Length: 178
Image (tube, rainbow, N blue to C red; front, side):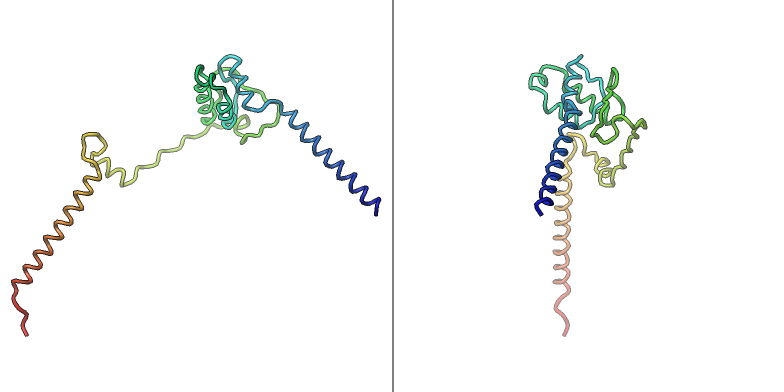
């Protein structure tokens, strides 16, 4: 029994050591985090030349210094790079980045060459078209709540007038015959 428990302990220690060594080597192989590569790319020539995933660009914007955000074009460059990445195109100028390692992106950063198609704008609803036809989109037109309130008031006045007319007609007809 002692030999079996010793073997199990040695195998367990070897497994844990291998697992720990494997994670350390994969962390060293990745190098800098993605957001640091974006910052380095921008610091190189005040332009983001490489292709980066959107999450990486947003993380770079979050980790940028306050002076970088206030006194440089870095936020504008990040916005342009995000728009280019969402469009499926490359950066606005310069060469593309060759990563060399495995990426953790969604796969659309380098492999896909098919351009993205723009989606159609959905048709406006009946409600939206009716509102637009009323002409209540400018500042000098009547507001919609006022129109609704006027409609409800008119409906209540017509109902009251109808009830009063019915009561008078009923009183004119005389007593019921027995």
